[in-house]
Amino acid sequence: MSVLIKNGNIVTAVDSYVADILVDEGKVRTIGTDLAAQADKTIDATGNYVIPGGVDPHTHLDFPFGGTVSSDDFLTGTQAAAFGGTTTIVDFAVQQRGDSLSHALEMWHAKAEGKAAVDYGFHMIILDLPDSRLPELDEMVRQGVTSFKLFMAYPGAVMADDATIFKAMSRSADNGALVCLHAEHGLMIDVLVKAALADGKTAPKYHATTRPPIAEAEATHRAIRMAEVAGAPVYFVHLSCHEALQEVQAARARREHVYAETCPHYLTLDNSMYDQEGFEGAKYVLTPPLREQWHQAELWSGLKRNDLQVVSTDHAAFRFADQKTLGRNDFSKIPNGGPGIEHRLSLLYTKGVMSGLIDLHRMVDVFSTTPAKLFGLFPRKGTIAVGSDADIVVFHPEEETTISAQSHHMNMDYNMYEGMRVKGVPKVVVTRGEVIIEDGVYLGTPGDGRFLKRGTQA
Image (cartoon, rainbow, N blue to C red; front, side, top):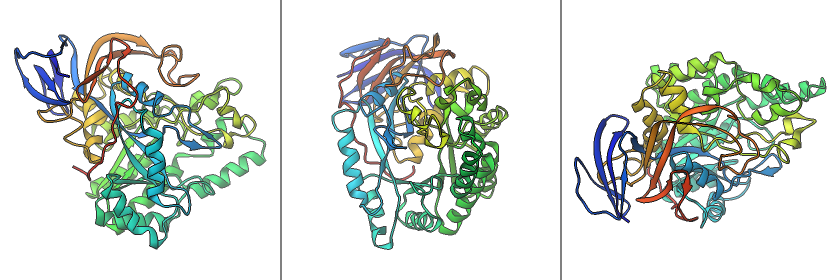
């Protein structure tokens, strides 16, 4: 299918100009003014921004956790992503202890096959790594899985010890992969959680008080120092607080290869959400927890200064009615995670660009370009250039909408941003040259999305 996008204000991480884009056979073929080419479909983008489709490098679809499975699978989750202007995700395959990484990858391929609405890749979550399995990391890189995630939290479940983390870093220094870390001092948190429960503190708000910012900062510091010794880059997922950001800033000032993402919920919500009546605070039990409001200004500043390079969603959707309630009498049993795959772009535009905290180029950078670069997808993804995949969003900057569970497309019975008024709406979403969203209607077909064999960092 050929598509001609006319008169749009094209915005990339580095450029802004008015032009036409001709898309054919899934690629951007021509960019110019007053293009008169014949096309199967013509889209008038006058008055709209035309930006690269979003790359969300942190999603959890069909993800087993906390005694249940996340409610969005690769069908509903990727369709919701598309409505929000995201055309590529990198999800997480999970190794089981004692199992091979290749078997885990096969399982996640099966979960996504025939369902995904947008293109997708995988990180590999590593739970154990005996020396005999180290060559499997190299095999994952050959198969296009060029990043590994390890948890420094959740002892007895998914936490990896420091030796495992260091071995993964050392091997990645040789094979070019990127180690991603959930950085919290899991053992210390475990003691705090047990003490709180022993005191009868079972409500959702104690999820936050038992995971203080210093626990995130300590783990961030420790991981940075391990990466320095290993000679490997390191990437911190869902950084939530100023204390952890300071550790990243200090490392980057030493010119270490340290990268970090934050998420829209840390930029827009705060720990007052845990103070709602009854069990409502469980809707915001995610990890790390929401922080005091003042952290938001520090995170926005970090994004502006490139101390933080990416905004991901960490979409891990668990329904309130029948999944979050697993922890009604024990906050530590509430499945950790929140929905957000659909709202990243509008929140970045409303709370960031419209508030003057970041500019349009930086929005595109953290939404699309830098995640594509860090995770081996650039320049195929993350930009609008001749030869790149035709993943394009026509974004109306003036249209307003109210976020609500009544109108979102996620398989969820609540929305973390319920009632929030946002400005800026994706009007048309194109993935590899196919129009899959137009004026609020999904036009794609399940299975349109393809697995992406990723390279190493661009």
